[in-house]
Image (tube, rainbow, N blue to C red; front, side, top):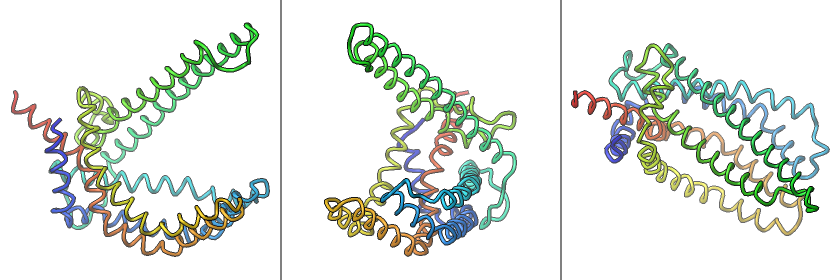
Length: 308
């Protein structure tokens, strides 16, 4: 996988072809903006009150209010996932030269989108199953450590060889999860778009072989400028509220809760401007985030064809 050319192609695609990317993402982004605005206006006041109460006295939270808010979460997450998949597939098709239809409108949820959705769900289930197995192993090691400490008259705590083993297992599991996640997911979108007989997980895993650190390097180079921009924007926008929060800290939970409440109220009040900014910046952001796997896939396929 070529790192520098992939990153350069992604930046060129996101900035020089802004209108092309806008044609793919504007409708999903408009739907997303409308849903977020509806979400905020419908549950915003109740959410603010609930957060304030949770910080002051969690035991006095109204269960009915919490239930009313939580019932919005799953439908919201499902809609967001569907919209993100549609944008990701559209950008991938554009990079791979497979996009058809009007240039300034992309509406599709067909085979490629369903394959990518199924792939994400399966990857989530695989990682969840691995996490459960990992938790069981750590639990067994904890029981062994407690039993060993009790047998020797020590405190019932996870220490000694069992504690070291638990730490090693935790570290190894964390690294394994990161490695597996990167290899399983990076090439999922181009694999789902180009393959017709599977959902792309096996293909993504094979393409990731020997490319783990190249993938990490490419995404690091993509992510750093985005993170810097987000930090700068957050510092300018939230700086006064963070200062107020720091000043409120010595004065107890009520003062801290009031400061956070004020910050959240400001965030909700400025939400329309945030959504407009997100819509305008969306083509650049999603062009940068979604196109690198497709450019890397295209380069690797072209290299494989030239070698045969």
